[in-house]
Length: 293
DNA sequence: CCGCGGGCCTGAGAGC
DNA sequence: TGCTCTCAGGCCCGCG
Image (cartoon, rainbow, N blue to C red):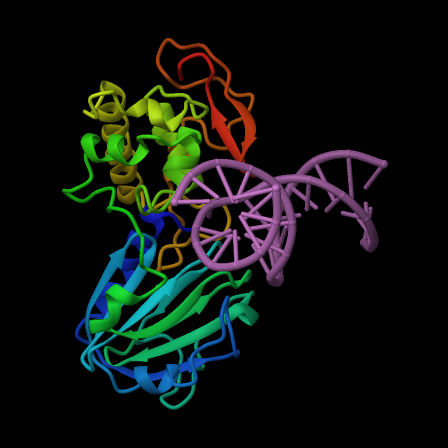
């Protein structure tokens, strides 16, 4: 599922039941997700109070009173479900109401707030890892991540600078988490469309010879801000796996202008073009050749 | 160093 | 109905 808006939606759903609550019981129901769980994974979580729940790029980060941080990534198909205190369950074991794909419920947390939190991930590209907060900057998973696209330091000058000298396509550059951290295939397609820039454009063309931000870079940054904020407001995009923590679908997929709309009319007012699809770096790109140059 | 393609997994949908 | 094939929101790794 998860690009930045989906992960942020999940964070906002988990925050009320995690922050300030203790992880009374934790359970990993298999030996691995994308990677094997650490041998002390459960031990470092149980009994810990979650002092804060943050997000960095597509990672959720739960701060623990012990000084550890629980890093969580949803991969392609991960989702969290919150089961409220009054739902059916017993104190000792996880007897929560099972969904039909409960065989993919891999990690369970029982919180002192009374809620159970269930992590489900059919494809198991997701992962969790506990690390010491004072070792965050050495963490390989986080090292090299570029700026937060909704953060203050991400602006046209910085984007143009990061793209300077890049011979790859603008599409590939925006998917590179070292350039900007949190975009994925959907929101890159949508941001390029909103800024009327072709996904085939060479990334370096965003930078001028003077290395100053061009109008193109400004347009692109504005489009990235807008599409991410709109998608967060909509609870993310649900194509197949993404759910809000309540189980509700996100609904930003209804606002896609190009993604998954091959052969349909471009939604840019007055454009009249047809959305096309082609493959770049092994992934589908959706765009309108008429209004994206 | 850079850019690209393969691979990791399972499930949904299309086509036969 | 059921089989086979393709494709999917991410990211790491190895190759040239």
